[in-house]
Image (cartoon, rainbow, N blue to C red):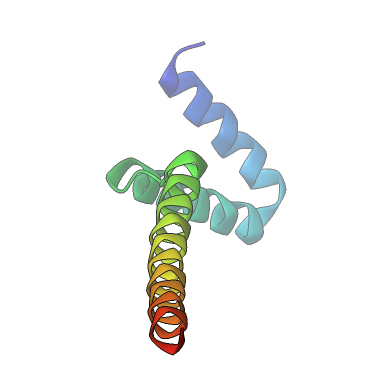
Length: 80
């Protein structure tokens, strides 16, 4: 079955449902066009971005902890 036959078959089926069938077909066509023009972001990319953001935040927190520990250690050395 080629593309034209599929379109005709879809058109015939949409006639069974009247205006609602036509509306549904138009919405599906629009969705297909949008998907073709702007491919969706794969979940893996989103996960990678989130993981990277978390790692940056963890790194910053660890730096703060290290600085705090360093200042505490310096304060202990001064008080001895």
